[in-house]
Length: 127
Image (cartoon, one colour):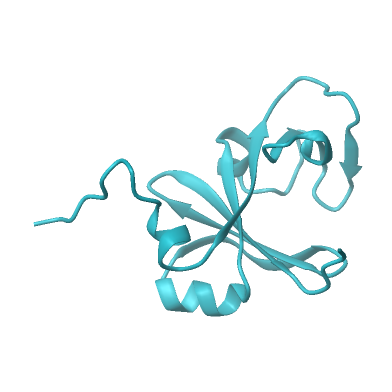
C-alpha cells in the first residue's frame, strides 16, 4: 500500500530532503516588462527580482536549446547544497545535466511525473 501525504504536510523534498523553494518558472510567448536575454539559452527571463513569491517568466526563441518540456510546462526550482549528491541520492530522471548558467551557480533539470523541476546550487552567496 502506498503512503499518501496528508494535505497539511510539506512535500518530502522540503520536509525530509532539506530542499528550499527558490522560484516558479513559467513559460510565456508574450514579451514581458524588464526582460533580460540569456544568449547561451536563447530565451528571455523576467519578473524574478521583483516578485515577492519568486515568479519568473521565460520567453523562448524558436531555436532555444532548453529542453522542450521546460519550454512548455511551468517548473518549480529548489535550492540544494550539492546537486551531484542530490541527483545520486534520489535517483532522479535528469533532463538537463548540471551546468553553470551563470557565475557561481550550477543548475540541473529533472522530470517527475511529467513536470520539470530545477535544482540550483549557489557557490558564492552574497548577503
